[in-house]
Image 1: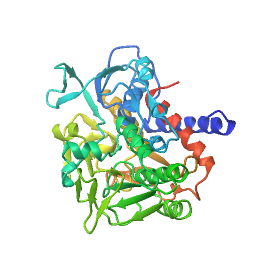
Image 2: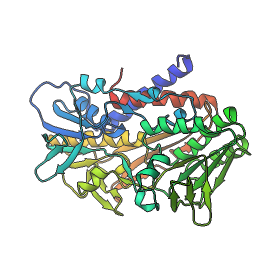
Image 3: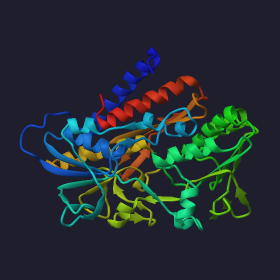
Image 4: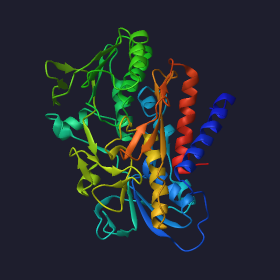
Length: 431
């Protein structure tokens, strides 16, 4: 991307990201790391939430000692990764490193957290080492409730029916399955009931795969099996794409909840029918990741983590701040990468003020933009702004602040790629 429109948009989005970050902090502002340490913060998880928290704790904190623990060597973005499934991007295009955070003074540890002891304020790693903290940030993402679907807990079923809902190896493997599918074959995607990570993501995936098949395997079909009664995000825009772009190729079925799978037969069993497809992309129901559950952080519906929205501090464990998809969402708040980035800035500002013994910002504002590709180039978006409401002690959508695209177009496609570049740079401190 080198055209002037895209670059101008990048500068605009970058400026907006910086403004939003500073407004969240209240009085916080970028400062040097000289002087005595004001505290130790361990951040678990290097995705949109954890990486952003680590960066802004260093930028705003004066001298906060920050250690980021992440199991993977690199950051792989879920946003934009559906383009890999359509053959429009490679996995390397959505992969970034942690060198920017290291340059800021964040100690990056590649490892697996095995236990959190909130009373002792320690984090134990799988290699036996222990990290001490004054405040802990946990951004663990989601794990899957495979037990909710008969047969899906079996290793053979999980190996055959890929979810691809954590970008990385499964994204590449699922793309290979799609490429290997015969012309005239069926790609079926199963969508769980809400809440799940990235509400528009499955519908975007269906469109992008349909776009690829339309060109490369025109006799093939895409079957969307949605456990929900209707499309859950950008409904009118996705329905228009289904009808106008992919009539005869894509079939959408509502209230089609996955009940059981047969790995040997390659069959997905719904309540009233069995579905057999050449590629079955089964996205299971979701909950906060195992790390959160094992640590005793999950306290809402036995699935999600409740938080104090002013600080993102867990309502179950003091001194532990939880970000992103693992949280029980505020009203209309999506489980998205952009929102995890915003959670992180609220938490970073609050942690710094708490370490200094100061009052936290009482009126934080967060925002979200979500772009969805309906082809290799055409994009739609939804945006929202959320203001903390002291009376209800949660974030509420600001009336009239959001909205959706008038229609899919390639200009928004360039904006979407610029948004991705900017949020990766913002989260990972990239140049």
